[in-house]
Amino acid sequence: MRQDLATLDHLQPLIAEVEKPVEPWASQVAFLVQLPGIGVLSAMILLSAIGVISRFPSAKKLVGYSGLGASVHDSGQTHRTGGITKQGRKEVRSTMVEAAWVAVETSPYWKARFERLAMRLGRNKALVAIARKLLVVVWHVLSEQVADRHADPERVAFKLMDWSWKLGAENRGGQNTVTFIRCGLNRLKMGESLETISRSSRTFRLPSAETLVTAASNVTG
Image (cartoon, rainbow, N blue to C red; front, side):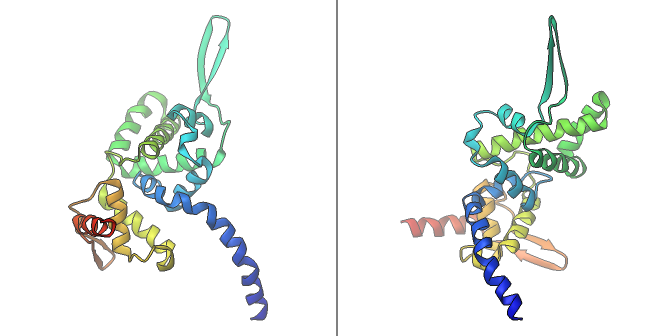
C-alpha cells in the first residue's frame, strides 16, 4: 500500500502537467464531437495535433498538414494527381479515416456521398476521400465556431454525456451532467427543442435552453 501511495504521489504532478495544456482546448471538444465518427478521445487527439486552428489559414492547409491531400506529379507537359501524400501528422490521418468509417455507417448524408464516390473510385479510395472531406468540415467548425448543418442533436447530446462522465464532477465547473449537455448544445446552437435523452433504462431530462441563457444573463447583468 505504501508503494502504491508513493507511485500515486509521483504520478500526480505528471498527470497535472499533461492535463494543463489540454484545458484551453476543452471548450472546442463540442465542435468536434458533433461530427459523426468523432468521439471525445478522437477529438482530443485532433486538437492536440492541430493546436490553434488559426495556424491554418485554409482547409487545404490543414488537409496538407494531415497528409490526406492528393500528391501531384509534374513532368514536362504532363500534370497528374496520385494517391494521398501521407506526409504529415499520422495521428490526424488515422483518426480521420476511422471517423470516416463510422460516418459512412451511421450518417445518411455521408453514406450517400460515400456510395457515389465508391462507384467511381472504389471503396478504399472513396473512404479516404470522405476522411479528407470530414477534415475540411473540422476546419470550418473550428474556424467559424459553428454547428455542422448535418449534425444530429440527440447523437451530439450522447457524446456530450460521455464527455461529462469522463471529466467527472470536479472538472465540470460545478455543473451536473444534464446542465453540461445543455451548455454544450447551446454552444453549438442546436437541440433547443430536445427535452430528454434516454440511455439503457434511464431517461435524462435536460434543462431548457432558455433557462440557461436567462441564468447566464442574470449572472453577467
